[in-house]
Image (cartoon, rainbow, N blue to C red; front, side, top):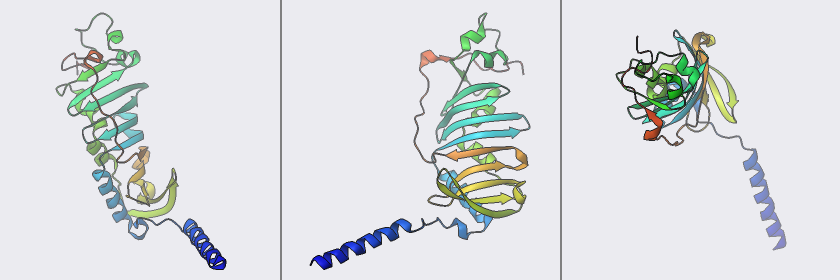
Amino acid sequence: MGGVASAGALALALTGCGAEEKEPETNGLDQLPAAEIEERAQEAAAGAATVRLSGTVLTEHGSFRIDVRLGEDGGMGEVSADGTTFELLRVGDDLYIKADQQFWESEGIPEELESDPTETLDSMYVRVVPEDPAYAELSGFTDKNTLLDGLLALDGEREAGGEGEIDGTPTIRVEADGGAGGAMEVSLTGTPYPLRLERGGEAGQLSMDDWGEEFSLNAPKEDEIIDYGDAVINPDE
């Protein structure tokens, strides 16, 4: 009996060693053409309830540094542009901006405000109503579908690149026009989420993580909100 038990233990030990050494299975993207890898990644992104998006975006309007969490009902996070940083929070259709004195000194302020408006607005949530010309631009930073539809776009002939790794997750790369039209790193295990994007024309680089992870999205308390109507930012434009 002792010999049988020892043999059984040895078999279990060998089985365990084999399991540890086994290579993790991929999600099959490494067997697909580049265009289909891109399509799978876009579908996964569209189907996710939430994501954290961070990095730099260069547009014709300037350079933006963003770090935002996006969900189905809104988003929150920081945006830096032109040397200033501000926070955005959108819950449903309600949009708020929170910034320091330096930010408000660089923006147009309604004349109705008291003598030192920047001090009044400093670190308070300012409600941005839909009628404000800035609403459409600012709310775009908190809209998951708007941001991803605009960013997850490559331009040029697609080609599957090499495999890599991002924060311990194996990835496969898709390039457009040899990288000049952008490149996307997609998870090679589990759901094929895009994890990193290099925008074409050296127009910035973005990381995408925390796919599907819940986060709290709550409106500020009423005593933390200032509401000055339909023209808080650049009212004369």
